[in-house]
Amino acid sequence: MKLRKLIAGILAGAMAAALLAGCGGTETGSEGGSNAENDGKMIVASQGPASVLDPQYFTGRDQWIPIMNMFETLISRDENLEIIPKLAKSWEYTDDENKVLVFHLRDDVKFHNGDPMTAEDVIYSFQRAYGSGYAVGKINFVEEDGMTALDDYTVELKLKYPMASALVLLSQTHVCIVNKKVCESLNSNEEFSANPVGTGPFKFKSNVEGGDTVLVANEDYYDGAPAIKELVFHPVGEAANRAIELETGGADYAINLLPTDLERLEGDESVQFYRGLGWEITFVGYNMSKAPFDDVNVRKALSMGLDREAIVKAVFGETGQVLDGPLPSSTWGWYDGVESPAYDPEGAKKLLSESGHGDGLTLEIWTTDSQQKVEIAEIVQNQWAEIGVEAKVQVMESGTFKESTNNGEHQVVISGYGGIGEPDHMLTSLYSSEVSTSNINKLFDDEVDALLLEGRNTLDDTARKEIYKELQLKLLDICPATYLWESETLDAYSTKFKPITYDPCRIPFEKFEFAD
Image (cartoon, rainbow, N blue to C red; front, side):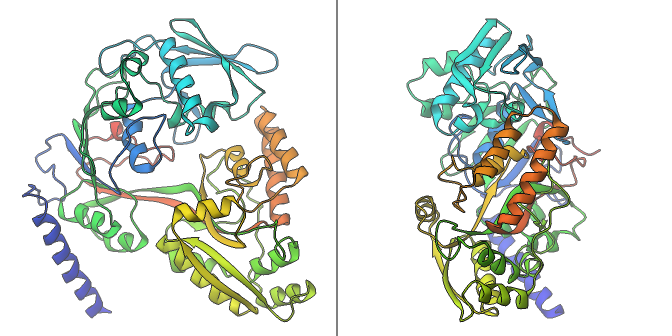
């Protein structure tokens, strides 16, 4: 073990030297990070380049993180998922049916080009979101022609129906507010993405295709200028290399590390962690529209044949935790009484036999080429072999996987979904009969649909939690999937910055302060 650690250390040092040699002589400090002299800069080792910097048209996390620091929504959520004011200082429903929502805007907000933000910008942004295709799930509960500027700083939204999650959805990045005048002066969305103008704590400076994205502090920010004066997002594809960049001073913040990186960095006194349970889940999904997966006892037998704790430990180490039901535990409305079938190989064999598969079962497991999902598929394959199930693993490119599963061609998948901390969003996406794409389990159940609708239209939080409790228990009984893992954000940053509280909604770089 000591020899392996020594070899690992030598290799890490060699990789670090190679990385630094390729950085064009980047100056670094002995304390880890490029800000040893506190030049006001933070370098963030991101997973990939930010190819799109438009809140209505972005598609990935590498784009989302800089966007959320340049643009803002009317309302936001704090670390406890409570709705808080942002560009709107207050809001209320003005009718008895809770279908007319009025926002009162701040009157001291300016875009980065100096233009004042008004209700016209809000209406334009929402209409732009409606038409983008990427934001439709965040805004389509509003009547498209029901958005009105009552005056320069008052916006009225007419909803299609009472929507309990309306405020949560309106806090999402795809409905950030953009500058109407700037957008209308350009010939394309690509032009806006190349020179974005928002209201947030950081302003756009530059973006190199395939390379660094640079933001600078908005010194006129209405909530006070951030301490970080230049924020550089530097793409580093491999998680291990992002960890090395942090260790050696090439970066001050490393995004989305792996369990192996955690093990190595935990003993480094120049490193601290930004981590907490997230809203992404991983599961084994069964196509209920195909035999034999239309038999609940087959689905339960397959679930009982999996040692979920062992799978999570092997693939995710000490990050995240075993998922016990259809919602991650950090989601509002999660019921702590959920309990998936326990690992019981003998019980699984018995159920399979009673379902007419005593002589065994042959099936295919589909997964994307994600390393972790491939590892899960292989472990599932081996564990199922012990209960008489012969499984073939087929690894697919993500686009092909999505198209094929949308069409319902699969039998069993290793898949996942990312939520927003709101039960209606995740449960509707995965289990509503009205959703043909992300409903990968092909679950079409009238009672589930009725509970989803009831939860969506109930604004009383206590009553709504009871609805989602019933829905979670019903889904466990139906067993459309074997729930495996709920994610954890695992980022790390230099101790030259003061510790910051984990925020499940975003990375608030404007809150970072340099340590004394």
